[in-house]
Length: 94
Picture 1 (cartoon, rainbow, N blue to C red):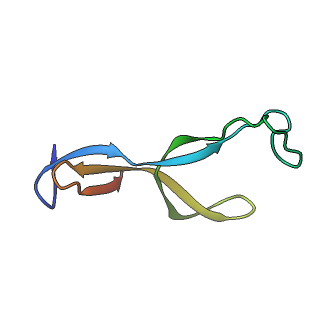
Picture 2 (picture 1 turned 30 degrees about the horizontal axis):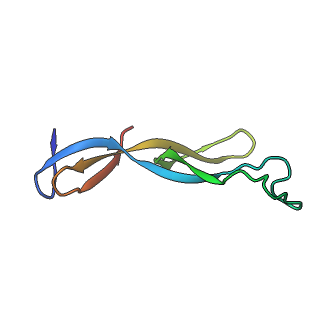
Picture 3 (picture 1 turned 180 degrees about the vertical axis):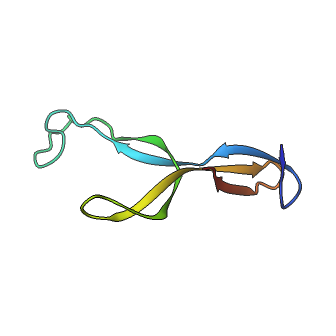
């Protein structure tokens, strides 16, 4: 258990996610577009997807055989949240 730097409360570990709403739609046959057909459209809805938040940084090295480009490293973003004051501390582990 770690202690909150602000209030001294208990910190709980977790992972950072972003929820993305993606329109999911469907039409049967000619339900949309240039030639709409009445009664052929299915209801449009949304589906929610969770995406992990990641940290990307340049390593300072160049990579590539013919064309050199900056090498990048991608790390998972993790965090701790205080159960008392709701303070969030984000960090990466290598």
